[in-house]
Structures are given as C-alpha cells and as structure tokens.
Length: 94
Image (cartoon, rainbow, N blue to C red; front, side, top):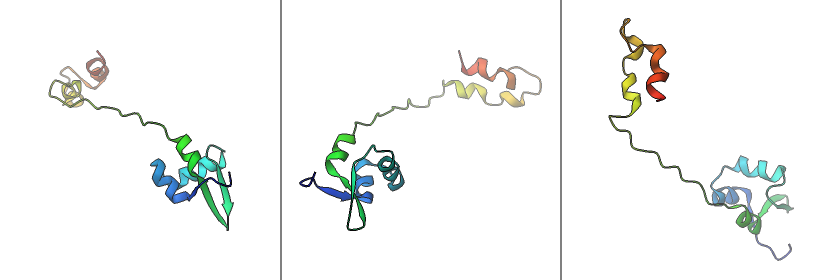
C-alpha cells in the first residue's frame, strides 16, 4: 500500500460524484480504504477505482396529454359529479 496513490476526501467525493459527507460515511463503515497522513485523511485511488460502479440511468418517459394524470384534473372538485377524489386510484391504476 506504500506505492499506492492517495487523494483528499473532497477529491474522492468529486471523483465518485458524491458529497464529502458520503465519503466520510463510507470511510467510517469500512467501504472505502483510507489512511491518516500528516493529520489529513487520504483515500486510496485504487479503492475509489474498485468502488466505482456504472450508474443506473433511469429514462423518464415523456409526459403526453394521454397520461393518466391529466384525467385527474378537477377530480377532487367535481361537486358530486364523477369522477370524484375517491376515484383517483381507479383512474391512475388501470
């Protein structure tokens, strides 16, 4: 480990795309290898490389006028005319 390269906690956060406090939590629970050198906590670059995982990219479908949410417009204020507020789950959940 003496030949390993180390970076600071803020740099590790930037590299992993997480906050500095998340890096500290990872260090405390042992999920990220680090050392104390000269009063500074340094994180192993090898440990960061091992930690990096491809992020899951969620695709959000486009909101179109035939989306079920638009059938709810005014459903809670129908004045007794159906659909009413109690029918919202029947409208959204087919």
